[in-house]
Image 1 (cartoon, rainbow, N blue to C red):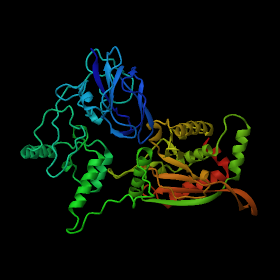
Image 2 (cartoon, rainbow, N blue to C red):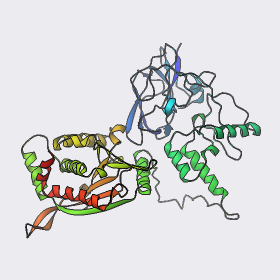
Image 3 (cartoon, helix red, strand yellow):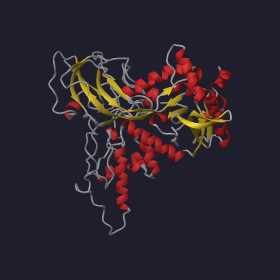
Image 4 (cartoon, rainbow, N blue to C red):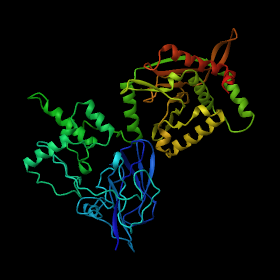
Length: 490
C-alpha cells in the first residue's frame, strides 16, 4: 500500500525565509525519482531548482506559479510505493490531499509539525517516517534522511477580538482547539502567546514591526502553525492607521479603474525586492560620504594591451582594477570592514571578498570573488568571467552572492563619467569607476589627448575620516596612472 508523504519547502540557506514559485517541473500524477528536481523557485538571492527527497507518484502540488511560499510550507505530496500512476487531486493544494501523511496529532509524515521549524529555526523538509519510505540524504539544507524528531502537538492560535482571521488552511493538521466564539478561551490564548515566543521567522517582518512600533504579540499569524507573515503585519498597521483617523474624516476611497488607467505596478519581489530592502537599509543606517578624482588611464590601458599580446587568458580592465583595489586595501584596511551597531564596534576583515556589480535581466546583482587578495590579475579575470556568466544565466548560488567585504562598481559600461552609489550594506566602502574617454590632459608639462577616467570612493564615515579615504583613492589613482607601482606588492 502506498504511503503519502508531504514534501515542504526546505531551508535554502543564507537566512532566506521565503521563495517564489517560478516553474513547476512535474505534474500531478507524474512519477518522480529520488533527488529529481520538481520545482524552480526564485529567492532573494538566486534561482534554485529544488529536488524532492522521495521517489513515487506526485499526488498534489501546493502553490501556483508566481506565488510566494515561506520556508516550511508544503510544496507537494508524493505517494511512495505506488505501483501505478495515482489519480490527480482536485486542484493544486487540495486540503484533503494535504491531510494525508499526517498523524491524528497534527504532524506531517516524518514527525515534524506541518509548517514547523527544526531546532535553531531551520525548517524541516518533511523527512519520512518508517523504513519503507524512499528518501534522499544528499539534497538541500534542511531535509534528508535523518531520524525523525519527537512528535508534538500544537495548539492553534486564537485570533484576538476585533481582528478578522483568514482561513487559508493554516490550521490543517493541528489538534482540536476551542470554538472560535469562546471568548474566555480566546483570552487565554492571547495570554499564552504573550508569555511565549513570537511565531516569526523572517527578520524582515520583525524589522517592519519594530520600525513601526507594532507589538507582534498582538498580531495573529495566518501562516502555518500561526506563523506571522509580512501580510499580517501590513494588515495590522493598516488597522492601526484606521483607528487613529480623526472622527468625521472619511477613509480614502479606493482608486477607480479610470483613475488607475495608464499605470503599471511592479511587485518588489525576488531580486528586485531584496535590492530595494538592502539599498533602503544602507541609506537609512550608514552615514556615507563620497570623494572622487580624475586619473590618466593611458598607461594602464597600454599595460593591459601588452599583457593580452603576450598570450594566455585575456585580461579585462576590471581585473586590473580589482588587483589595484586589493593592493589599496592592504595599505588601508580600515575600508575593508563593517560596523557592528549592536556591539558598537568596527569589524575589520583579514581577507578581501570582492563584490562587483553586474546588471542582468533579473536586475542588479553583486557576485563575490572569494579571497580576491590572494589572486593575481589572471586569476581575478577567470573568476570575474565565471561569475558574470552565472549571473546572466541566473545560476548564481546564494553563497556566491553574499559575504563581500568591498565592492567594485564599474558604471562606466553605461557610458557615464561619475556616480555617488549607495553602499552595499553592510560594507564600509565601494570604488566606482566611470567610462574611460579621450580628454585633453596636461602630460609631462604639455597639453595632450589622454585616456581619462573618473574614480569615486563612497565610504562609511564611521570607519575612517576623509584623510584615510583620500589616501586610499589617491593610491588607486596613482596605480591607474603608473601601473608599475603594483610591482611593489607582487
